[in-house]
Length: 468
Image (cartoon, rainbow, N blue to C red; front, side):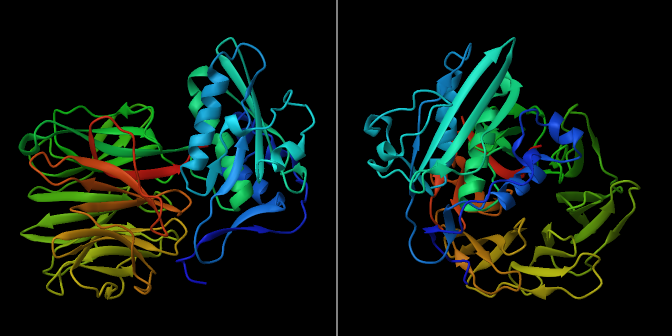
């Protein structure tokens, strides 16, 4: 089946209750996960595998029809104040923001649940054509909150999986909301979720010819920005480590580009090894975090280099007279995709991760190609394509086939993938004297183009992993 598929509502096998209660007990995450030797993604995967319910969204083919869902007002079970409503609002925004779900307005609800544990009046929800119902409750005490939810299949008249609850500091209420939405998304779509994740990006201020740039980390939806560098030096190309604990980026603090490594928890940063007379830029981690691959300019020539993070040992992976940059590993770490002008124009190539074989050209369409990024699922490579005076974000198979352009504008560039490989985020610059850049996202089908709600200009995003 082609990846150019639609999402359609279907019915699957009868509900199977979870066999492992631990898969649904995320109340003390990350403490509970750590105690059992499990990560949040482990528990999510277990929940998905064991909760193949009767109500599912699946990839089939054709047009997309959003699933109508009802999100009942979350109950305040003590001390929550407006947190219950705020969490419900974020859960709803997460789900409807995918364009796979359509929230039925509360004004259309025939009746509301009488309590979190009250029996569900399924006929009332069927009457408004709701396919699924989310019921939640929030309590707060001593700076801590507890949020819980249940998901119901309205047509079959039964729960879709067990109820779950999450504990967190009150300041972390948005993460709690994202976790609730992640579980709903995973149970209904059967896919890994992506709401409880972060994006590192470059914030831009000032006029076009004198931009000041600093690196920020934010929630996937643009909330809670944290600035990890100041604007005293030009910085570009921030990239997360596989576990999100470190950042690579390129700094011009000393006048020439140099790859830096930062510890996200402490914000301490240090330069990677760089020989005199060279410039390094466009870095990325390998999937296991052992290697950094980057571009190195020396003597007027730019090649792809690889460095052992632990030892600092480095070696060239390409040695041509062409300009080769923007390397990106495949999820299994066995291949590297990159851009090169060795054919006379900027194109996309792939090679073994150890550089042991000649690169193979992947792109053959009109125009030039750059900034390739391998999907976390391994099934697609996203890229920037320039054709005349128009720019596109597109995707292709790892062998270069089935190219699909997702966007078209004055300037789109720099795609990065959501942790589940369903959504691509990128930079879009508007025409005109100011040339303001904003972050946008689009589904891999080319649907659901959305700008991120970020104050000021932003560029160069990198989407991190699902948080533990």
